[in-house]
Amino acid sequence: MITLRLDPKLEQSINNTAKNLGLTKSELIRKSINEYLEKLNSPNAWETGEDLFGKYSSGLRDLSANRKELLKNKIKAKRK
Image (cartoon, rainbow, N blue to C red; front, side):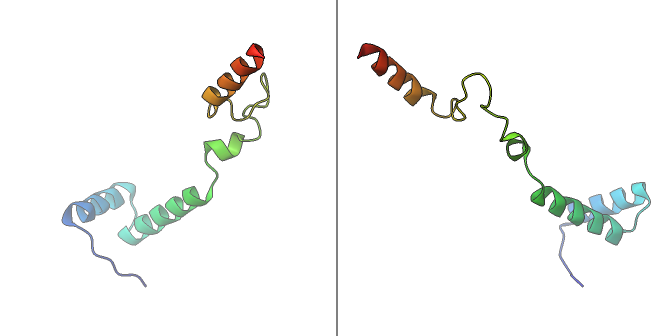
């Protein structure tokens, strides 16, 4: 059992939302917490596509992050 204090505005929002969805306040809060925890544990967009980023074209995975350094090295190489 968990007890928590809510400010009146949040409590009213929970009451209204639960009523509109036909849920008890406890059901709404349980579902909300479960959804929040699932989102925390699921991979973000970067993690999902990480193996694809930079894989094509240049082949450099850090091209956007290190563009200045890479450009500087390329210019130095041309001057030699």
